Amino acid sequence: MKCSIQGCPGEYENRLIIHTVKRGKDILVFENVPAEVCDVCSDMLLAPETIRRLEELMQQRETPKKYAPLYDYV
Ligand SMILES: [Zn+2]
Image 1: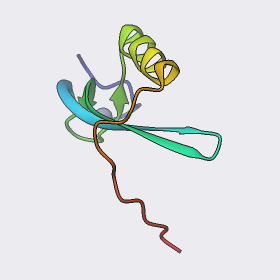
Image 2: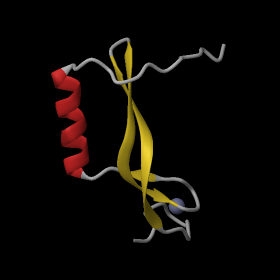
Image 3: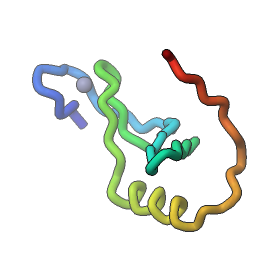
């Protein structure tokens, strides 16, 4: 599929990405999320069912599989 960003000649390809979601003061990280990513500008699309699955995971509040270090740039 062609990239939806105006003027970008790229094509979306299926990739597994790391997706982060900010929830209040929490930052949740999801690994191995299937997404379509443009090979030129890295624009990213998530399918509606992928978003639904992420919402489910957030509501379940399971114990995380891993912890990621978080750094403040400032
Ligand atoms: Zn693009």
